[in-house]
Every structure is written in C-alpha cells, then in structure tokens.
Length: 194
Image 1 (tube, rainbow, N blue to C red):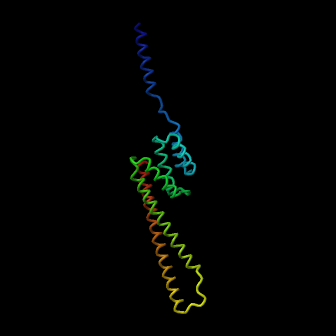
Image 2: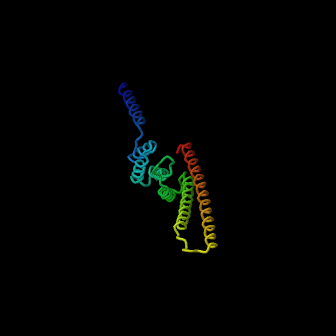
Image 3: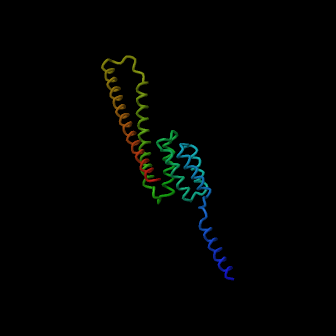
C-alpha cells in the first residue's frame, strides 16, 4: 500500500510536468504569417505579399490578420522592394486604419497615409506641368507672326519653361525629402522591433 501510494503520487507529478512542458501550438494562420515574414526578410516581396494576403483571409478578425494587413501595406513602401507600389500601399494602409483604429501602430499608419497622399499630389502636379510643357513645345507657331509678337512668344515660352523647371526641381527636392522621411521611419520601425 505504501509503494502504491508513492508511485501514484510520482505518476501524478510526471503527468502534470509533461503537460506543462508541451510545446506552444502554432496555428495554421500563424504558420503562414511566419512564412510570409521569412519571405519578406529574404527579399521575396511578391511571394511575401501572397502569403500575407492568405494569412489575413484565413481568420479575418485575428491578430495574425491585423499584422498581415499592416505588412501588406508596409511591403509596398519598403525601400528595398523593386516592386513597391505606393497606390497599393495607400489602399492597404487605409484599410488597416479603417479596420483597426485602436491598434498601437495607428499613428505610424496615419503618417504613412499622409506621406503617400502628398506624394500622389506631387506626382499629379508634376505630370500636369510636364503635359503643359509638351503641349507648348508641340504647338505650331503662327505662319508669319510679326517680329514683336515672336519675341513675346519666345519670352512667354522661356518663362513657362523656367517655371516648369523650378517646379520640377522643387518636386524633386520634396520627393527626396519624403524618401528620407520614409527611410527614417523604416529604420525607426526596424529598431523598435516591428
């Protein structure tokens, strides 16, 4: 009886300790997210996007879906991604902000949204300026304008060209400034362990 009692206690302790030592369960969506993270770190950005999208769709209301949504946006502004797409990033960041307004990363997400909207605006303005310049250069002059009018036209075109070049330089400087801000944000995110 003495031995049975002690062996019973020993068996209970063994069972409890084995139950406590079991490895952490990894869900299917967590496994897909881990694969996406690995692909992202390896530079396989397009495949990582596919995996992030799959992880997001498996369980839409989970933390894995939230993280996947964030990285679907971030991967499209990542400086080393040759397939980066600012329009897609803006769409995904806006989706993240709409779905997860209380997330701890919402400030960063809103900053990205503002930066991307400004970049789109500059792109549109630059394209408009370029189109105007092309129209002016293709426009046929009048057959025989008086000499004074020709000089005035040359002055107008020269002034328009100067304005376009200044706008282009200004847009280029702003684009470089925004790229620097984006790189700083990415570095800060990586330092913060996100």
